[in-house]
Amino acid sequence: MKESLTTALPSRQIAGAPVTNGLMVMALLFLAAGIGSGVYAQAVGHHHAFANTREMPWGMLIGVYAYFAIISTGLCLLAAISHLFGGNKLAPLANRMVWLSIVSLLGAFLVIGLEIENPWRMALGVILHPNLTSNIWWMGTLYGMAVGIMLVEMYLLVTRRFAQALVFGVAGAVAEALANSNLGSVFASISARPFWYGPQLPIFFLACAFLSGAAAVVLFTHLTHVLSREEVSPTVFFGMRSAGKVMALMIFLIGIATAWKFANAYSGNREMILAADSMVSGPLATNFWLFEIGIGLVLPFALLLVSRLNSVQAMSAAALMVLVGQFFSRFNMVVSGQIVPQYAGYDNGLPLYLSYTPAAAEWLLVIGGIGLVGYGFLVGERFLGSLFRTEETH
Image (tube, rainbow, N blue to C red; front, side, top):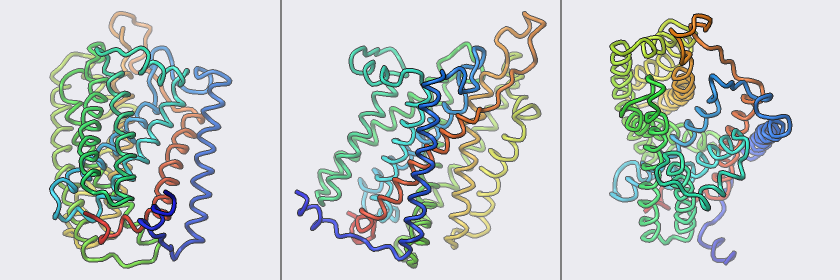
């Protein structure tokens, strides 16, 4: 078996191997810091290690889990579309997208697994105590199925059984899309949190998945060529341009969806107006205007338009800005939905907004998730690099 895999997948030499080795060590250190933070939280108690409170039980790590999971969904869906319809300009990037989707989802699992107080109950509960009426149960089950299906797909791609890989790729994309919509519904079905409640978030998360997935494949493809000191081939460049077009389109649609979200909020009740104000002019204003809107939407859209998708560096910079903006978008979404005290108006002693600042242990877990994704990317390029080349696609 080992010999057949070696024959099917020749190794790829990376010109920047010393640099790559250093990045792998750095990624492992990031991962170790994150795992250490999670172990520390288990030892001293999550209520001591993290900044969550009874009034604000969900913090930054919930948003980071959603961030990585949504990136994974976008990559998986774009890869499945590329494989399914074939002959399109995104196809040269499809195999890399499958691997990055797996790695991103593992990063999401790492963050959520160490964020919850009893992570072992999560896996056991999904199997032994299924709750078919729970969005969280469906989300966990479907994401678990998706990563298993994509691992099988990756094996079939490595062994060049492309027809079978296509079947698993489509099945994985369906599982990811359903899991992503359930993730949105986890927030959207909580009627006690009016700023989340409603049918918009599941569709909004799906749009963010396409945006984040396109940005991730552009950025990592460019980084691959920088590390290997290779010129971007015409076919890969046109694939990146297609992903850039997806980015531009989804930035435009997400901008419209964001505007309507605030228009609806300001026509709602007092809690919805206060939640919207927290981002427009309140404690989340810098995160919202500078990072989510400015860096995450306006600047990359302008850069893509000005460059006319003719510059790899411009597309890569826009992709990085999109991913930064999406990180803050998830943070803002989680915090803004809880920042208004639930009993505001009934208890005059309550503040206008609750206070939340992520603790050091939470930031270390974020670093750990980034380390896992970064290490997975580098491992994939080192051992699966030939599979990601244009001539290896199907």
